[in-house]
Image (tube, rainbow, N blue to C red; front, side, top):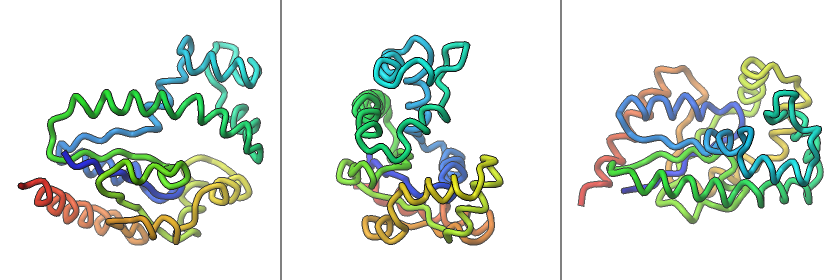
Length: 198
């Protein structure tokens, strides 16, 4: 089974591309969804995060207040690394379990911070979803109701387009419309199916 790590900056269209691959009945594992599962109330990861950051990162119902946590690690390298040291091993464990249960020709693993966390060598191919920086800004503001400075800060914390392109085996250009995006996924699906054949 070929393991393809899919990545891209915020607002590049990773979720849409994953949805297109899913239409081919190709398994898609989203590490963000795994991370969300890991920090549900009562889970070990959430308890460890609270031990370190304090219980003021929780809502009244005991669920994680992501914005409160994000504000605690923003521009604090030591705290961000500590959060990653809690989450990343658990994400990897859950991911390996999911992979062990698959029998498909190939699998898409969506990892937004693939290059930032230096995981690209763990996968057979890296697929980068790319678009213009202004498009990233516009799409993220429209989707997340964030302001311009928040979006720019997130983009600054991620690697540059050039750094992503440097490790890409395949690139999807998401600067055009949804039809152009779909056709690129169609072509890549054919390519990956051929690579699977012995």
